[in-house]
Length: 226
Picture 1: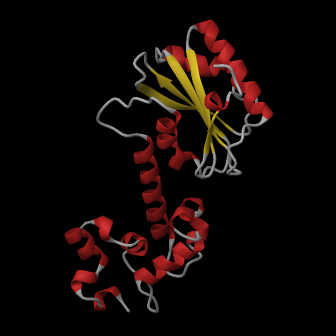
Picture 2: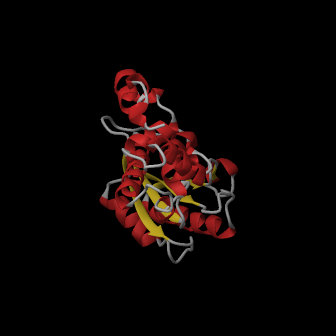
Picture 3: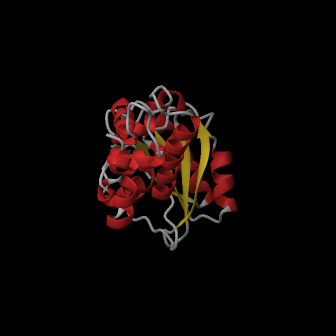
């Protein structure tokens, strides 16, 4: 059934505007981004096909533009709108605005970066710079690629920390495999960075490894002496 054939209160746009977007199903939200379907399928039916590609809403983050455009009724513009909406969601989740963000535990940090980093295809190493109160100054990407002591050099990490006047730093990187268990290279690189931080008077508080919905705190695990 075409969306225009539905009663007005059941159409995604009207329903979302009058009742709130939280009342819409995943398919209805995607249908709003699509704005139209095909001659044979409504926008909601096309949206349901997109959801089936990713085996549900969480799988959308792994879909490419090309995969989206394999669905009948999805061209470049519609694929771009879906990917843009996903990227906005990641950025909002990772960068809350309006007041200083204070982190007191690994859970706090994982909550900020999990959705943004869990679906990355390459290992991405980031540094979270904190002031003396534990407020976040900034988060910067140090390197992208397989984590090695050569790729993640203390010079780049601590040059940025000094420039930001950071009192402490937390490292975060992802495992594209989804398994956050630290490798030997993870441990050796963290020890090296922690030792350099001690020399400079910038404390390394933790190194979080992000997996698919799971994370490991190397500080909590005792793998490295922080």
